[in-house]
Image (tube, rainbow over all chains, first blue to last red; front, side, top):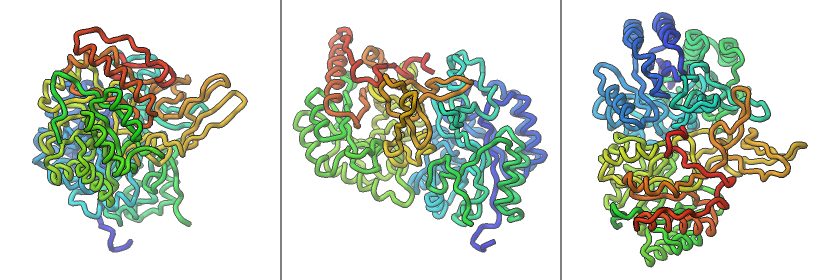
Length: 305
Length: 335
C-alpha cells in the first residue's frame, strides 16, 4: 500500500434512515454493538419526526449497549425542521452533554456551534469556503453530499482540518420533502399516514413506466434505487485525504457489509472479489458509483483493467 | 444599496431571463426584478438565458429609472477549487449597483458579507432555511436581511416563523414552477443526468431529454429514464423528473407531483396577514409575454388586497403548466 495513504481509515455506520419497527431497530443496534467492526455508530431519526415517539423508549438501552461496546456514538438530527416541536427536538439534541451531534440541517449546526460537532451529508458542503466556516464553528467531522466527484472530494479533504467522510455503501439520500410519498402512493395524507413507511424497510422501489427500477421512497425522503458501493474507489479516496467512510444501514447483513469494507480497506481482499462478496450480501441489489467518477449518480463505472 | 421594503406594502419580485423580459416586468408593475449572470453561478443556467455584465448594467439603469429594484441571484454552490467565478459574480453585481444579492452557499455568503458589508443580502430558496434557528444563523453571522422560504411551509407555519425572526423579512413564491422537494436539497436531477441545480444551476436539463415515438404515442425520457408517456392526441410535456409518472405499489401515478403550477393569487390576503414582505414569481426561463401577464395579475391582486378589496378572479389557466394549478405546501393537505 502506498505510503501516502493514512494507516487508519475509519468506518461510520450511518443512522438507520428507514422506519424499522422498534424491536427490529433495537435488535439491529444490539447486534451492531456486539458484532460489527465499525468505529462509529450514528443513532437518531433523520427523516420524519412522526416516527420519533416509537423508538424513544428504546433509545437509552441502544445508546448504553453501543457505548459499552467501545464504539463512538453520534446523535444524528432531523433533516427537515419546520414545526416548533421539531425545533425543540433539535435544540435538545444539539445541547446534549457527552454526545457528539451530527447536524443534518443548518439549524442543528447553528445550535451546536461553539463546541465540537459533526456535519451530516444533508448539509450542503460543496466548497472550501463553507467547510472553513463550519470548521470555525466547531465542525470536527464532515460527511460530504452524495453528488460530489472524487476531484471535488480531494480538493476539500486536502485542505480540511475536519475529518472528511464519504458515503461508501447503501442507498443515497437524494431529496427530502414536506410531502410523504409513502403515504401518497397508498392514497393517504401525511397527517393520517398510518405509518405505512414501516412496510418499506429498505425503501419503496419506484419504477419507470417501462418497468426500470429508478428510485426508492422512504417516507418524505427520496433515495437512489441503486446501492452506492465505493469498494473499488476506497484507496483512491484515501489517497485524496478521505479518512472515514459511511455505510448506510440497509435491510441486509450489515455486520457482514462492515466486515467486508474493513477487509477491503486493510488490503486483505481485492476490490473485484470484494464486489462479488458484496453482491452476495445484498441479494437483488444493483450498485452504482457514478458520482465520484463525475458521472450521473446511477452509473456504474467499472475499474480499469 | 437601498432598503428594499416596508412592512405595509409587499413587494412583487419578478423574474427576468433576458433584458427584454426585465423591461416587460418593470413596465407591468414589478417592484423588483431578479436576474442571474450567464453562467453556472445561478440556478437557471439555461442556454440563451441570463445577463452579461453589460446587460446587467443597462438593466439596472432601466429599472432604477422607473423606481424598480434589481436583485442578482448567485445561488448555486461554488465548485470546490473554483470559487473565483462565484466571487467575481458577487463583486460585479455589487459594483454594478444591484439592490440585493440572492445567495445560498454559506462560504459565498461569508465572502460577500466580509468583502461587501454594505451590500444587502437575501438568502436564496436554495439554502432551504425552514426554521428560526437556521434563519437566525444567516442573519446573526452574515447580516442576511431577507429569506426566501423553501416551498415546504404552510401559511400558518410562515406566520409563526415571521413572529420569531423579525426583523428578518420573508419572501415566498406565489406563482410558477413548483419544487416538491426542499430546494437545494435535491440531487434527483444529477442522479439521472449528472447535472444538478446545486452544482450546475440546472434541473432535468434539456440536453438529457429525449422524446421517443412508439406505437402508443410519445415517451419522454430524462437521462435515459422514462419520465412520462403521452397518447397521440395529448401534448407531450417536458420531462421534469419530479413531475413524471412512475410505478410504485403496483400502480402508475404522478408519485411526487402532477405537472402543475403554483398559483396563490387567491391566498394573497392570508399571505399578507402572515407578515410576508415579498411575493416571488418563478420563471426566469419564461418569455416576456408570460412574465408580463403574471406580473400584471399579481400587481392587480396585491393592490386590491391593500386597498381592502377582494382579490380579482383573474384567469391564469392559459399560462400554467398543463393548465393545472395548486397552492402547494401552503395548505397542509398537500403533504
